[in-house]
Each structure stands twice: as C-alpha cells, then as structure tokens.
Length: 144
Ligand SMILES: [Zn+2]
Image (cartoon, rainbow, N blue to C red):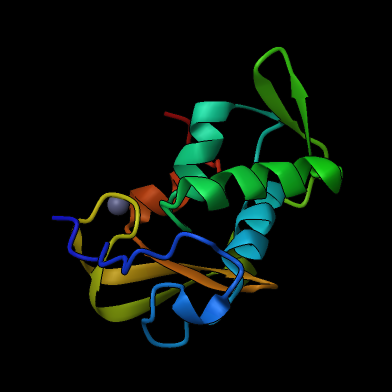
C-alpha cells in the first residue's frame, strides 16, 4: 500500500515547508536527492535507476529534474550515453550512516509495512524509512 503519498499539489518545489509534512521532515528535497546520488555505491547507474532513488525523496517530476540538474552541475554525476556516472566515492558507511528504529513504519520505496525502519543519515537530513532490502537498493549496495 502506498499510503504515504498524500501530496497536496506542491508543484513549485523550493518551499521546504510543503514537503511531506511528516515529523522532522524539514530537509530540502533537492539537497537530499543530490546527496543520495552522491552516496550511491557503484560508479554507474541508469537514469531510470537514479530516478527510482530520487522518487524516494519526492515523486514530483520537477524535483526529480532539479536533483539531476543540480547533481550534474555540482559534479556529483556525469551523463554519458544515457547512463549516469557518479564521480564521488562518498558511499554509505553502513555502520555509521544507516540507523534502524523499531516501530510501525511504511517503506518509502515500496510501501510495505515494517516493524523495523532503516534510515539513511544524510547531511541534509534523515531519509527513510525503508525496509531492509530497499535500503540496500537505495544506497546501491544491492543492484536490481
Ligand atoms: Zn521497501
């Protein structure tokens, strides 16, 4: 179930206050998205795979585009023959950058109900919750 997509028509991005409105979610979705790409483990991913990650931050296509744009402008990724190449090797150190919490969560990626939620600690904010297999996909540790 995708219970969490209650978007209230936020079309113009930019304003962090209209992003998701759940708990401590005050991070700029574009910053989160760029950081997520920077953390991606492995050097190459398809645009579709990148978008799949970014959509865990926001399903707004304008934000998705802005994340890819910013990431490219800042040298986080390079586009090459329809693939994206990540340039930083800032991959996630699992022990310190992924935290788990017990409770009732819904995976941001696939919508599964979780007893344990995994969160990625990014400079821009905490990103999650994800299930144990989705967190590995989001970080690129596990390829589809
Ligand atoms: Zn999931």
